[in-house]
Length: 121
Image (cartoon, rainbow, N blue to C red):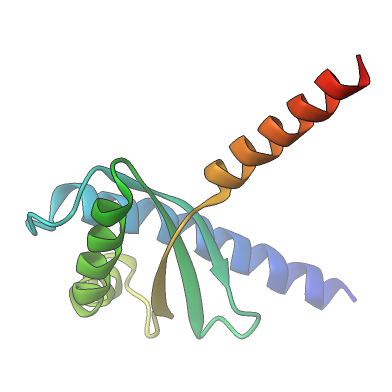
């Protein structure tokens, strides 16, 4: 059982490092004009560590958000190569960039809860 805790701790540390480095690469090194202001909100690593879903929160209109995710996906190879060099590891997970919509979901839930509270009064 302790082996699993150690493995999970390792994956958490790798995920945090990837989050910081990917954020720095997107902010500072990608010069694509399609990329709007964005930041990495979460990274979900697969249990084997061979793939990772990277959630991006993008400021702007929905079409700008989609263009930003497409542009970052187009630069996926460059980002992986930079991560290999920066982290000095043999393997960097396959990256899948997705739009983080948790803020919109949270806003919608708050709105629905507000309606329910108004009805009860």
